[in-house]
Length: 314
Image (cartoon, rainbow, N blue to C red; front, side, top):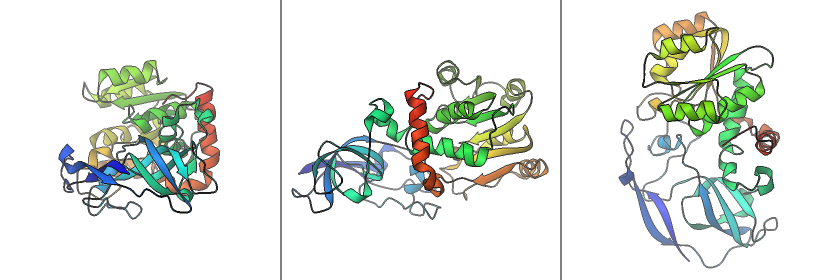
């Protein structure tokens, strides 16, 4: 069978900015027969995520991330439909997903590596299983529950950076659902800020490209910041941390501003900010959702319930 696939054509370098030429679309073939225990799937959705920048490097900087190989097909979160099955638990027409889905139009995959999906759980919107009801939603929910220490009725203020991104927009909504009394997002355009407030239920949003972010934070978070969902790192995070309260918590989800730089993860804080963190006993622990897969099933069901009830938007 003839297919199309996306392969890694070149590496941008540890300190380089990725460009389209780093990838190559090519024609290839897969076997015409499906071996025992495997299925033929047609690709429906692929997820492109910030962590993939690290996989473009020969050294990903992380022991749990494997690098993409040159001239080999890229992979990540994906969803497809079974077109032929030689696996006892999967049938033609089943929708399935995997964290290691190849970036190609069709593939023969080990049925044991796939998870069957129930479209009704997300009101038929399959792509939600790569977003609000997938690894992105799990990252937001488990990050808040495991590292945010949100308590209903505690009048906590949460700030989310990268708030208009897939994970950030969910984190703000989930922070509210878990009990935060005030949620403020930080994004890069007025349009994104407007969507966060008008559609995602944030109390306020700051365009970090306009005005004084520190001043706006003080005005919008007069009681200080209790929980910070950190997606970006860098100067934005330094500004937020400087306004965090005693015994507050940083959910260290991502450091997007640092991904094109050759720095350790998580990047060290500047000395003055590190001093604030220590003096105020602010927790800043590395968070990896894959360490909490024992809570995956119950957490996905919670996310799906919120989606069905209209409380969570992707």
